[in-house]
Amino acid sequence: MYARSWSAPVAEGSVGRPSFVTDHGLWDAGQLAAAERVEAALDDVDFVRVAFADPHGLARSKTLTAQAFRGVLRNGMNFSPGPFLFDTGHAVAVDFLGEHGIGVDEIAGAGNFVLVPDPLTFQVLPQDGPRTAWVIGDEYLRDGTPHPLSARAVLREVLRRYAEQGLAPVLGLEVEWYLTRRLDDEPGNQGNGFGLQGRAPRVAAVNAGYQFNLDAAYDTVAPVTDPLALDLLALGLPLRSMEHESGPGQVETTFSPMSALDTADAMLLFRTHTKRFCARLGHHASFMSQPLLDAADPSGWHLNQSVVESATGRNVFSAEGLTGGLSPQGKAYADGLLSWARELCMLSVPTVNGYRRLAAEHALAPTRVGCSVEDRTAMLRVVGSGAGAHIENRTGEPCANPYLNIAAQLFAGLDGLTGAQAGSGGGPGDGPGQVVPQSLREALGAFTTGRAGQLLGAPLAACLAKLKESELRRFEGWCAQAAPTPGRVTEWEQREYFGAY
Image 1 (cartoon, rainbow, N blue to C red):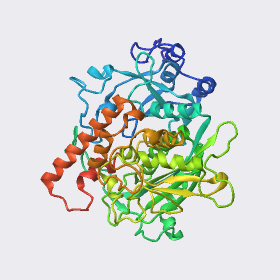
Image 2 (image 1 turned 180 degrees about the horizontal axis):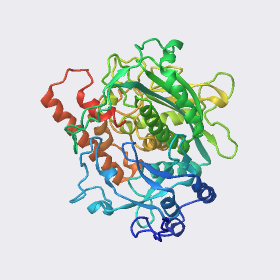
Image 3 (image 1 turned 30 degrees about the horizontal axis):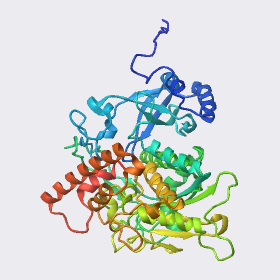
Image 4 (image 1 turned 180 degrees about the vertical axis):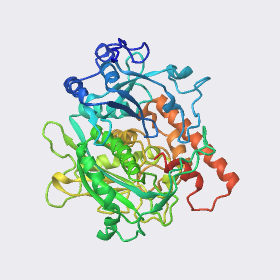
């Protein structure tokens, strides 16, 4: 007996196009050098997961053999546009067979786009069994231009504008999430389908909660979170802390400051790997803001942000003298965030469930558009002084698309820094003192009537509006039939978000 040696050329259509990266000049010198290192490392890898963030911020991927990935690395890979077309419940929200109305011709007929791995994001996952790597891709149209529906491309464009000003954002993550224990292995597929999510995972709390930062409470999550922390460090993520928050099994994970693109990539990898890791231990991790769990306290995503001069590394938010606070540039950045707060809120809080946290009864969640020094009830909290001065935006929910949430913050802040917001004419209800949107329906209204297209471009703005309208239509239809208890998380929300996020 012998092992046959197959001569198998890459099947036509399985890759974007030979030399796609080179022909369109898609990589800089750092990526070209990283690609050589990746190619050298592929002999020690069995599989590669090529991933990207869909408009909802969920990681979509294909798992390739290492051999297949050798061609995909420089040629790209064909990928269905399905992740751009489905809402959070997998209902078709963008009509790809008729008049889709988003201005992207390649969506018609569900034609492929090209996903190009970014070699700088290549990571070997720390796990037993098959040696699997993870890499994040950039989405392109077949002519080599960035895909208009790519969230990562939106962030790249914002960062290009910063570079033109000689500036670079620096961001820090504080992410709250829930660790629960699975009660069974049932997949929850009964009744599932397009727009019909099956039963959410059945779970139990890991502790009683409501002893903030109690050391003994952390002991109840440590058997999972401590080895998870070691995994995150092995992935090269700049983990700072694991902390027990107020809710039962509610964990806050914080990271040291990173560049903006690294921060978004880290958030995508952190959420995806955390869910994978906890599942292997018989637990369930969810970044849904307020699960349908007894005594759950809503989770938030606090995004710490500052801006430095690229040439000198000086923090432009730093005020002179010993009084602390923000420099005039820092205040202008904050003014930009306030000016755009309502119009771009949907990018930071994109789900029906996330708006439960912004209700008035939650004292530490922001309900008004405002900025204050060391005030955890404010939307923008000014923290630190000197080189450490920064702004913490407390609005976001932890399942938001990291590229769109970060891009929205940086876009609005740069608008303030450059003085553009003074003449841009915010819409009604914008600016300090106004109440943040209290529902996804209200946020969608502010989004569609405002200036979001200046950040996203018309196609992505239209696509997001269709996705959220579909999500809302299904939720409101369910509520009309079920008559849920006011103020209580619904079974619909639990099915829609708890497992996926």
